[in-house]
Length: 171
Image (spheres, rainbow, N blue to C red):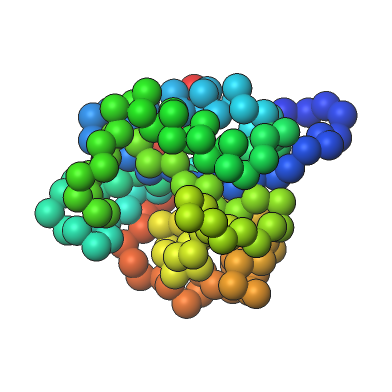
């Protein structure tokens, strides 16, 4: 689903994974998309998926999605903005893989590989997680992660408890 039309963007394409399982998760994801639009142009948005928790089972199911963002920001600046948006949504980092009001993960950025103390690109576990790959395949099925196209990686992770909903990221 294309979100905007206009002249070609001369920046960087980033894919951002989104998740929430506390409060009104659908409203949080939609509000986060509006905030992310302040950082560039939303080029595409996946459908929303309901997902079984991973790593810490004693919590509500998540809603997950992916957006494609064309942005002039460099990766670490974009990460700073993602963390600031999470903070606006009262994200708390207590339990690893625990419940959250909003989670924004920079999955891929302009084909770059990056390993710093703060950021690894592409996301180091994206290729193992159906809740990332399924919505990512909706917006970028041929994108390469771990040297494989997303649509092919998805075949190896099916069955991790990811279900498509009729929810949309766009109001």
